[in-house]
Length: 344
Image 1 (cartoon, rainbow, N blue to C red):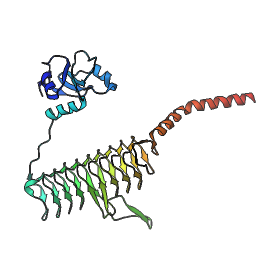
Image 2: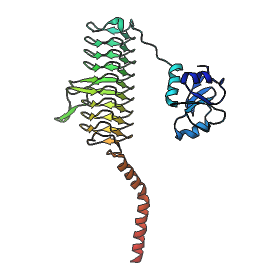
Image 3: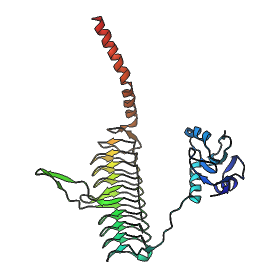
Image 4: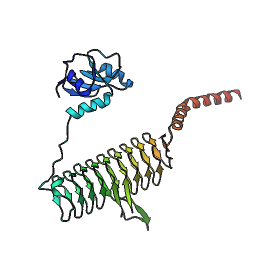
């Protein structure tokens, strides 16, 4: 990247508020990390101090903004965040484009259903008998696709992904490195003094346009299916238990664990390190704050829940406020007790 501020303004349809149109931009970074030559962006008043202190050469700002910092070129655009994303998309790192081909060190069993001229299979990947691979799918280095598994058209499996037997991956699904789909659910019964394993005979079904982050595990069902709905996005290091059903277009953030047979509705947002107990329902459009623990059903509705056990956010905030007053109340009680004992 090496363009002038005027070229950047033309690319983004922006207006130069301060600085020379000949100023050259050679990179991009956040307000805090930017150095000379970098472009950054500002869109939230909470970051006004970072804007004032930035070492960036140029900053994208909202239209109508006043008070640009000194020695920083400001370019006004409709949406600084989206405009910055466009710059990153044009000038940033791009993954290699899809290129069909089978690496000579890949292992593809007899009976695999695929047009090998239309898929990409990297070194040391293994595709077992009966698997079905759609056109345009990419199977990364060291991946394993189990017997009778289905990988949809345009799906992308990064290196070292495992899709176990009979699991179904939809079109354009993205599975990042270390994802395991279809490992046995954690099912045991205590019998005659020892833990007896309960057979896990179901599958995992992942619908189209789902993306799952590195190191996440989705267990196969005891019977039937563990099911992740269309468009849902799951972060790194998430555990999804057997027979869990997750609806469409949910967001599930790192460190979350969902126990077996829980049902998550559509458009649910679960912040980092949430926990959902087994056989619990979380209704559509619900938001769970970080570290929420869901122990009973939550109804459908655009509401935020927090805490353990999870409760409506305002109730949880009042509880926090009450707890913060406990030391003061304790001191008052002790003082009253002291006065009472002194008067006896």
